[in-house]
Image (tube, rainbow, N blue to C red; front, side, top):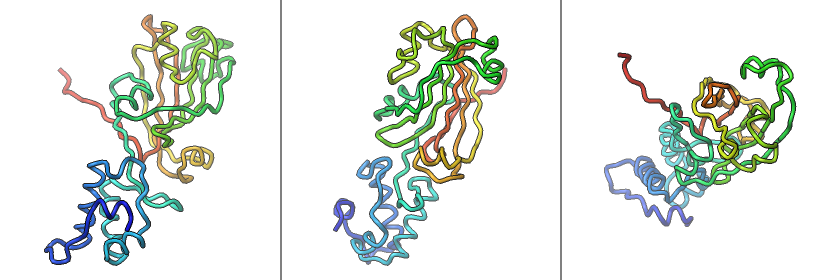
Amino acid sequence: MTQLSHALGKLDEKSSLPLYQQLQRALRQAIESRVLGPDDALPPERDLALDFSVSRITVRKAIDGLVSEGMLVRRQGSGTFVCARVEKNFSKLTSFSEDMRARGRNPRSVWLRKSAGTVSPEEALTLRASPGTPVYRFHRIRFADDAPMALEYATILAECLPSLEAVESSLYAALERAGNRPVRALQRLRAVLFTAEQAQLLHAQEKDPGLLVERLGFLKDGRAAEFTQSYYRGDTYDFVAELSIAT
């Protein structure tokens, strides 16, 4: 008997509720009560069937319902996992680290690249900067509790930071220490399909759906200082915004 089946208890064959619904309800309660935490893997279907004395068809039917509800996600070649979704308020200018800590999760980054250079033609247009303007570029994988959540590619005007090494873990914390944290931003969200390279970095599959958020951050004096492109796993993030009627 697995630890999960021991925690959930036995199914009641005499109940009027079908066995697959009983198992589905038990798994749902385990997720909601954090017996199963975000990104935890479910035991294989054959093990669940053996532990709960039901057929694999019953187990599959129970899991299918929770997948359709968005509580579980199947990852090809890896198994079935508890969704580790994060609700991001699209109307608040917060950093990834701040969002994760506010949800009791531990943020960290794996740096892919830190470099100094000058603006590309696209960056010059976006940041409203002159050709040849110095910038710093920061490319990294963002993690929450060791689960890869996003790829982030940030370009910052070099004048906003004392040095490339000033950024340790949090880019916004470094900008704040330098007195140049953006106070407002324009954000654009669109759906994308991951490339093979992006999928490998995010432990996803090529052509899995993702979300691209482009952010242009502005300083108090109105200057654009930050252009960031973040690719989020579509199975981990929900973006929400509060709307009100125009007056």
